[in-house]
Length: 102
Image (cartoon, rainbow, N blue to C red; front, side, top):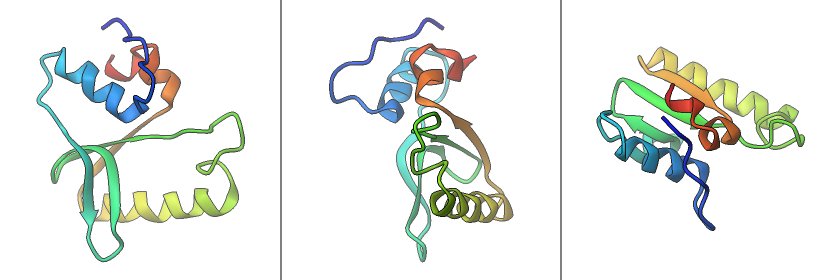
């Protein structure tokens, strides 16, 4: 699928959602809370089965690649796996160039 240009104010998760609306893929839920006690959310999810996380700041020492943020992400993703979730992880660039849907 060809990439969609990012509109001002459109987050990578919302952009991916827009790309999905133009495909044959069932629509996911945006900002799905999957672990109420911890208040964890997935960027997009097909409840109880598949989730998508967009990992920003990969090349700029962002939250997802610094020590504390990385450890918190590991805790979240490990709990998701224990709970039966499959989690796909993408960078914003993968959303922008369309490869997140390939």
